Length: 158
Image (cartoon, rainbow, N blue to C red; front, top):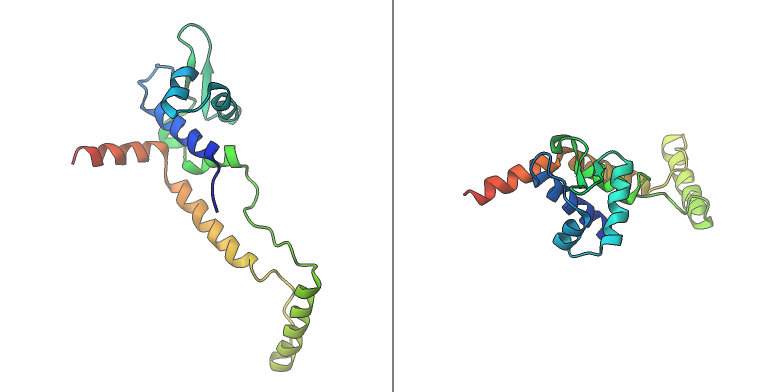
């Protein structure tokens, strides 16, 4: 599994905005230069973050971007879902395949012979994949932008 480069750029952009002084807006040129990406590419990412209420765009001479809410309230999951989407990571794709059905017919016969009942057909892989996704989601919800900045500040003062 791999997140897109856009997700990495979005997270880094949010970290830069969180480090900016309160009331200081970071322009798209400055932000793009800091991240080493084109302004048009970053503008598309920032537009998604703005639409989802994570950042606010300010117009005018001192315009730019700022966080729309406290860095303590923005989780890594929030940012990732804006860029990557909110769909499930795994969908069982072969439930209707002949191989899958034959496997379950064979398993059902064995199960009925041993226990007298048949369990429903389900995706054998989905339970494990859903569990992995739940753990990752929980982990990403626990990590906020402010928490990462605080951790970096603690590490750099040691």
